[in-house]
Length: 222
Image 1: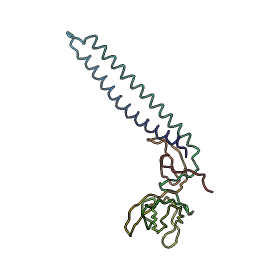
Image 2: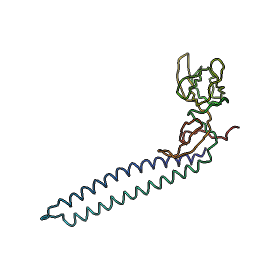
Image 3: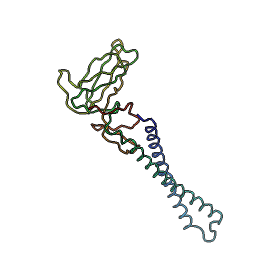
């Protein structure tokens, strides 16, 4: 995958969020300052009006706050454009397969999984979950990081229904579980979109991820 593109998208998302927060705070301060200045002018003592120097300082402060609001609005616009640029760069990912731990779509074709058992494990168990998070299969697998094939069948050998599935690998030592980790597999990217935190990738089946969740990328299998 393109590490520069991923880093740029992540940076843009963080910058956009920070700019929005700062803009909201400064705009609130701007409105408060304007209200206080207006109230002060309306209620000043005619016999003892505001000193001209003090009034000039307040106007200068007002101008500075107004300029800061405009600057933050401009930065927000630039960040939005940058996010759209990152989304355009990732448009070529649509239709490709991303290696992720997110739920992927199963349509009666075996999935290749990439387990990572604990270092000291002497037994490993692969657990599959459906879209509702319910356990659907549990099978002992070799204690190895070599890829394994999940056929998508239940305990009786009957095929499971098409849908989204996720996987975990439970590692055991001496019959005691010493770890449980998410298992990576490939899911097809169906859409790239601009989300509230930046660029998002939508997998076939509906799972939404960010570019940094992708650990590998390949052309879709036929």
